[in-house]
Every structure is written in structure tokens, then in C-alpha cells.
Length: 349
Length: 83
Ligand code: SF4
Image (cartoon, each protein chain N blue to C red):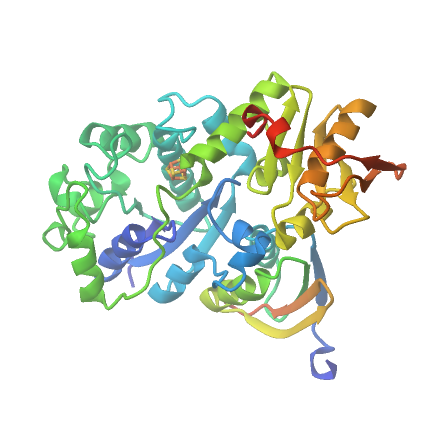
């Protein structure tokens, strides 16, 4: 018996990639999903960190989609490799620090490489892209850039808009019937909704803006601040995770404070005590604060005053704050909470 | 787990990692394990209680036991012929 035709679908967890995979499955092709973890993905993490999000389901949307479709999902750690995409995007950034076009080229290229691995043996790659849906990364001309620069060329099928594009290898070979693919175009989401209804899908994730934190203005600002303060554009996973957590306050270029906004964040920040100076009020209830950078004694004192302002002792004359250094050294400080009017707006990253 | 005693037992320490990293580590480890092996995944992110069983369901493996001790979680997976 001939080997079945196999396709690997990029699954983001949103509706479009779910529909794209389903359209091809309906044609009898064996489909498996692939999902890339860059470290910036809007997934479980923040939901797991912030206590107020705990009531919401913490499901991993990509896994959930795979389960709805009844396909396998391979989740790939690309944290290290993604650095070159984000730090030097050939095609530049979108509105914030989101290198969407380079990111898509990278992901399609990775999916292709994965699918060609001997033990996998897949024939083509599927994405949920729609011509004209996003101003930069989903224009007609960028669609061909993605296909070309990823190396996938005509092994890249976009089932939702294939009818608006040149026939690809799977169509020409008859692996899929072009007539049963779609010609969606532009920002109107009605056709997708209709197709979802047809397939009986009633629930899907709708990430605002995009599938990752890099499309978020505030997050991008914090990342730019991190690079500026270090004088180099680089990061480790811990850096970018910490940008998702707490209030970030930078009184001077050489250090910044990360103050937990609620219990979930405090608990998360606790895990970093071994890497950072950690401050906590002891005379009053209050958040945990980490100091990132190279503060001197005066800076730590100022940090304690800022922290006291976020504690329940904010109206008190004095608040006791304990500062723990990663080596175990511990100092007790009695400080006057800094009045909000003395905390310049520019300190808030 | 007396009935499982004859199966090889492996451990994966994913404590301190946030989802989806524990799932990715589980996936990568299971790819190299033979069917019948039991894998104890140790984790601290409560998200693993959703994600690891979901991953197992789509790949045809089985979560046979889940244990919680304070912040620490242990999820025992039985590797089946799946992936
Ligand atoms: S939103 Fe983020 S993950 Fe999505 S394409 Fe853009 S950079 Fe990549």
C-alpha cells in the first residue's frame, strides 16, 4: 500500500491554523501539528503566574486545538535559535518589537526541516495565513517571501487562501484538491467564522494583537529598556520571563526594581532569590521586590523606600524592610515610605 | 504501585520550569523511551496538571497517577506505542 500523504501544520492555538489543518484533514491527508516555543508566547506562563488568572482555564491552546482536531502536536523549544530572529530581523520589526515576517520565515523553515527528518517523512507544510490579514506579514508579496526564504517554496500550502495564490506542489500533484481549498482575503473574519461553524467548532482562543508578547507595546518597552540598560541586545530566558511579571521601576541606569503586583507574582519572584537581591517588608504586609543590576548600599535603601510605598505601611512613618543578598547576607532597613509624588513617572518602565 | 513494578521507571525533573517547558521536556524524553516504560515527571507549575495529560492524550500515552505534595507535583506517565 502506498504511503499516505503527510502534512505538518503550524498550530498557534488560534482559529485560523485550526481551520487550515482541518481543511486539509478533510481531504484525507494525514496531518500532525507543530508548535514553537520562543519564550515570548502568550501561553500558560502568565496565567500560571498571576493569581487572578487562576480561575481561568490554564490550558495550552495549541494542545487544546490538537485535541479537538484529533492530531498529534509536537512542541519544539526554539528559545536559543529564536534570538537571532528577534535580535537581527532582516525584514525589521512591526509596530512594536515583533519581527513577524522573519518569525514566520523561521517557523516555516523549522517546520520544513522537522518534516523532512527521516523518522518523520512529511510531504508539505500548512499554515493558517490569509492574504491581506496582517498589514506587514500577510501581504501578497510577503507570502511569497515566506515561501522562498523559508526554503519551503511550493511545499507551503495556505489552505485558507490558496485559491488566491499560485498552485503549490500538493495541488499540482493532486495530493489535495485545489477546488476544495479557500480564497479568503483581507481582514474580514466572517468567512473564518462561517467555516468554523461548518466544522462545528464553537470555542477557540482569540489572542489580542498577536500570538506573542512582542506585539505588546508595554512588553516591548520593557525589553528595549533591558537592552539599553545593559548596553547590549541580548537576553536569557529568565530575563524575558521576568519582563512579564510585576511593576518594573528604574531609578537609575544601573539597576531596576521588580515589584510583585499580587500574590501569584510574589510567589513567582520568590523563585529568583538566589539570583537577585530580594527585599520584603517585615513590619507591614507588602510585596516582594527584586533588584536587577548592580545597586550600591544607597540604591538598596532607595529601593526599600519605593517598596515601602507599595506595602500596607505606605502611610506609616517607618517601614522595616529586609534585604537578602543571593549569598545569604541579610540587612534590616528602617525607611520612610517614598511618597508617590516623589517617584518620577519616568522611573516606571 | 505493585502492579507496575515490573516496568522500568524513569524520572524527569521539571521543577521550576513553567509550561510549556515541562511538556516539551516530557515529550523529548518519551521519544527516547520504549513502550511500557513509566516516567515520573516532577514539576512545580500547576499548568502541568492540564498540559501533560493533554499531551499524553494526543500522543496516545497514559497518565497513570498524579500526586501533589505542597508545591511539588508528580505525574506518572506510562509510555504506550503512540509516538
Ligand atoms: S506575533 Fe510573535 S509569534 Fe506571531 S508571527 Fe509575530 S513575532 Fe512571531
